[in-house]
Length: 512
Ligand code: AMP
Image (tube, rainbow, N blue to C red; front, top):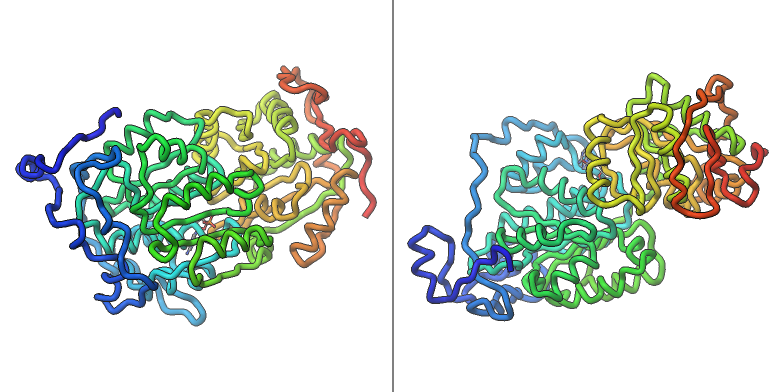
């Protein structure tokens, strides 16, 4: 209960004297989200009472009324004149969406001019309160699509009643810590000129810090992984029954990771679907995902962004045919190329990633490792180092790499081709972001070859396979590499990884 602000109804006069925002209006008098929309002539969703109206008095159920101690962001005058974007046929400008000025200012700072396709197709509906189902990968601008909707709503319908500690006005659930941190970072960028409070609840990081933050600051935007969020909810440190907007990101991944029972419990804590706005995102749609859409959304607008729009537009894709023994020298030499500013290398298994990282570091390359076996604090530092250019290379597994949303990554290397073709699209989507171009290089040895066809099928085009230039296969200097044999049966070979897995010991070059 650290820092929790205990206050009873009789404390109101005291808090008013202290200049705190403790609106004394009867809870039932607060306008509903839907009726507020009706007042402004906006199209609303069905239902006209919002859960906020069911507010209970006096900290019932463990929650405590709180004072508003937020500091307003410094207000420098700014007008839309400073953000001129000409109209363009077929493109949606943020100017056309009637967004609040502080949000427009942040969008201008981020350098977004036109809405990306998913934003252009969804925002006109979601800004009016409609539910949405988005079939979209990362790299499409989906995060800003839902964040702009959330921020617009929170700013246009400020909370008028008394607020309680731990009550979230909006909730975003995502499968991994990295993704949560990234969404929160994006939210901070977009909320720069507002006083909206953003919280993250993720496992593996300081529980008490997260708890203190929940108790000390309002919760406007809560971004969380399912497990940790449930912990907080079950301990009654966090309350979801006032959430006006629910975002479920990467639902397919949450299914794969076995999180759906937890997510179900979470969704049950939020207002029913006709009384909240729900935005639901998934890169793939299976019958199971469709089922969740049916259960959790109400008359959603469906927006589908094809993966090839993500993959091929801004990323030049190479596939190098190699033997297992050639993979590490190839990677080593690619890293030395002049045009390689920053590079993420993906491998399928944690132990492969660990060995690669050890090799690169032993060869004096500033490299970080991002995988499930790395402690969360370290992962955050590793990402920071990569973002700021302190390290040039990041070695990652698919799950850990999901949350990497960094602009300006010049190269992605697939050291092993992924088992799931969708992961290929995710991986190469780490580069070529925000309209910039990027390069992906896939290493295909015999073991990888059979994974090419499903990828090509997903992309809808063939990938040209090349033999790498000789100079890229020159062996790196011999160095002593200190191995951490964390798991059995996976011994690294000095100076060069087999990479191709155990089945054929790395094999020869595949024929194509
Ligand atoms: P996401 O799909 O959410 O991971 O976003 C991909 C990247 O696109 C992020 O780096 C965003 O900052 C960037 N982005 C999002 N919306 C826009 C936009 N309208 N214009 C330019 N870049 C954008």
